[in-house]
Image (cartoon, rainbow, N blue to C red; front, side, top):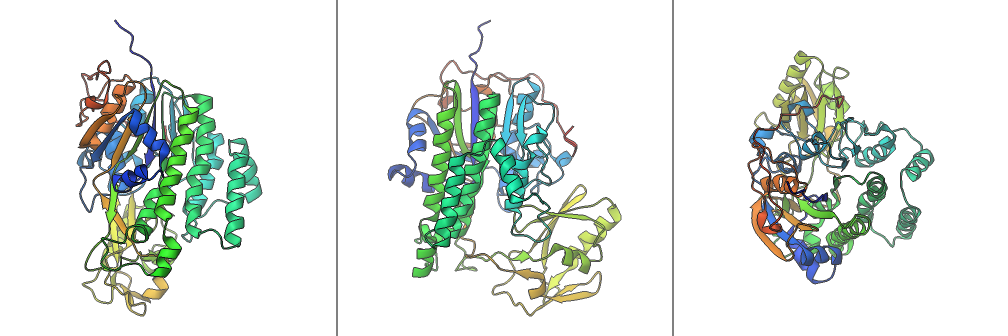
Length: 495
């Protein structure tokens, strides 16, 4: 038997990055590192099988990770109970094959497994700061503190800034990165920098940790996830590309937010360049998104749709009569997850959310989904605009009433300007990948079997996608498993 060459694979997950912006930025020199990967490798457009209202990153990325369509993997909302998600995910297959693993920030990767060779830092919207090994927890403390800063009752991280800084320095945070952050705040004090720039510092800081961990463990398969590009597109698309919008940005908006998306893509290119520098020559770099974005152009919301947030989830639970009887935690704004130990309390809470209304009984106030012992709740985002802040919000199950202004708020600097699109992107470069290959349109279901092929691992029969063989050298051949992989289900303890 001829031994298969050993390759490592690094999957750089740039959430909702899209060729709509990548191609112009490749042409104008904004993304030289990605341009280099495209020249030396293969490019394609994976299409997510999800359609609205199920076209969300936590669903689409799970399709990538499992190679299963959404009706099989079962994801409905972000950080739903892990035991309700049907896998296995690609990192489970890698770990179960005895290969080393480095997972950093992938969506819905909580809780971390504790039986792997390598490291595991779950996504930045995880229910807790648990990591593997446990000494990496200060990284997750920092991430959760940052991502939950916008929501009351969501912090829970009490480490002092100096104490946290000392811990993070030991885990790989570079002096040069700290100096860059300090320069930003100095410029911001002098009003020479924009507030939105700070969004790009989280992935740059996290890459310091990922680099240190990768160099220490040199894992066979690793992931690094960043959501910063998605944030810029959702909030500031109109300032970058006004053409498709029904209402154009004024001079103030252009001055304040113009250049933000290009800045985010430039940061993404920095991430790619840094990874290129520290990985081995036997490593395949894969840059991908599980879905993309497009301009939010809807006649009903000509100027974009504002985001309505619950101001205080504790107040809402009090109005429903269940305060202290459940565990609420913030995930991605404006979403709250609420966990229950008592099924009867859960049933009453769901009924209360479903019955609550704004102004009149025919106008629901909340959207609510339920999986296992957890519900996901938002203020209904398609409430008629403009919001009447003096309107009554009624909770019929408890006969309580409050004013809209005491319950919810619109606090974002801009309305929603980008929304989810099925077309993502993928670029692959490295050993075993053809130079200059064009994949064209494919499916996000094709990504997992292709990554397994590059790793020399068998493809479970449950995976619905194909191997992107047009992007691979002739000697890189798929291995088909005879039996389906077991549906690995993790307990909340990560056992």
